[in-house]
Image (cartoon, rainbow, N blue to C red):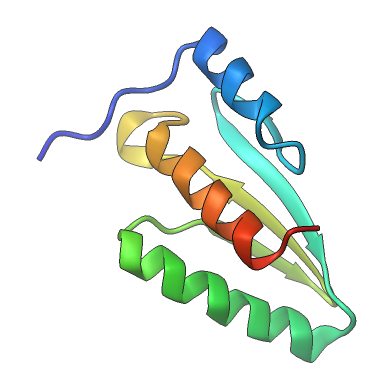
Length: 97
């Protein structure tokens, strides 16, 4: 199966307007999730992991004490695709902010 197409700058800008917790550009979507403590942050990674595995689309996760720095990018496409937007929406459903 070929990788999904990258979003155009206009498509990405429109999508980001509906994802206020995320920022980014054609190279990746970014969000920081802050949890009450380290164990909560580790548990959040597990929750995100189940969603990501279900989609077969895995985020880059950087854990710093109680903060998760998330980056979504479809590496096979060389940028942001609809897969990244869908994963962002699912992460927002888990952690509405």
